[in-house]
Image 1: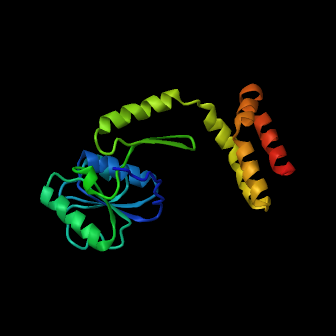
Image 2: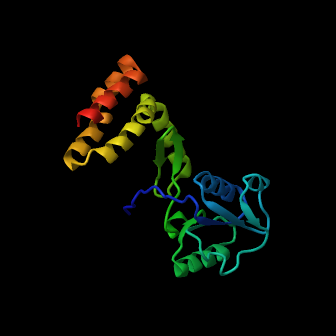
Length: 206
């Protein structure tokens, strides 16, 4: 089955987590870190969840709890509850993630990590969360960390290029030059200040 990888912009939107255990804790933490307005619904809630500063409802799930939600995470040990939430989500047009049956939901949360502005995410299509985490860590270990410094240095020049260079072809060419092999070489050989000067020239000459 072919899936479509995507980055979900969830800041400021309501995200419901049904369940109060370890998986719910991890999902709630990830959603909160992404800026979502998280609400956890469960009769019993992990103490760490309460420390996240998210809203908690110490009760069972009720139809109607998904009103206004952008996404819902189902992470209970009760198959009947999981199925009910999934049905309600489908009727309400809310995307659902199921911890018990990943392929039964609308999206899978990959093993991921943020390294500066870079997000590395790995999915095994629900086959093995452990394998996904191992592969993620291997990718992080193998990644050239200079990419972090390059992207952080380039960011303001990229924004300036998008604003000031009106010709589409010239703008695209300039954006490519900001992160090409020459830019990386400048960073490695001369440092971040030299890279900033290089970026300045790229934007001014475009």
